[in-house]
Image: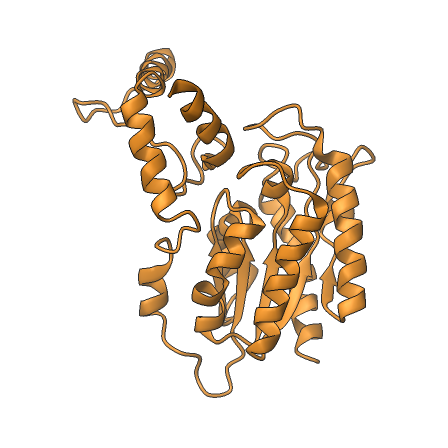
Length: 277
């Protein structure tokens, strides 16, 4: 049982903590708060947190309950369900845009008002998601919101093996599936390149730099063959080794405000191109 749980944990639990807790998603393990309700800090707090995580990791029943809960909503359809229901349809003449992706997209939402002030843009990123999960929620979190354009940013977690090993072809198949659904519903699609990374803090040793570069080459070629707008985030963010340039990333993967400041006008240009403006 312990072996099975370990395999499921490695293959299925999403990483939702960025820069000391800046981002948390339902897929991530949650460390319980101290029973006293008080906040601890410094070495004492770190020791307490480590002890709590060790207790959780050593408890197969707790792990199994968390995994069962995750498997009941593997695509995390519940994450935006209430917010989707509360979102009004686009106003007459409004050209809504949905940004669809993983934690890189979700964290972008923290600067939404400064990145895209006054724009009818909706953020539907979920931390830790892979492209097959995004395919499953595409109708609920994109099509049903009736956008004119969807901006897709995916592939980081495919390469990071968040839901298990994936081939380039499998990732590309998921992009094909999303494009088919978008076109069937009159939605223009913009695809952003996978940002650079030379390692993943939550799954070290995968040496992703060359894999990202290769996946981007395939995605760009596919976009050009399909007439899909391609946005190159990678080139201005990457150093010569395929890592994020200094100051542009929180952890080697997720952009800082300076990183998003580079990405924002590129995304906007892609949206305007898709709209034919």
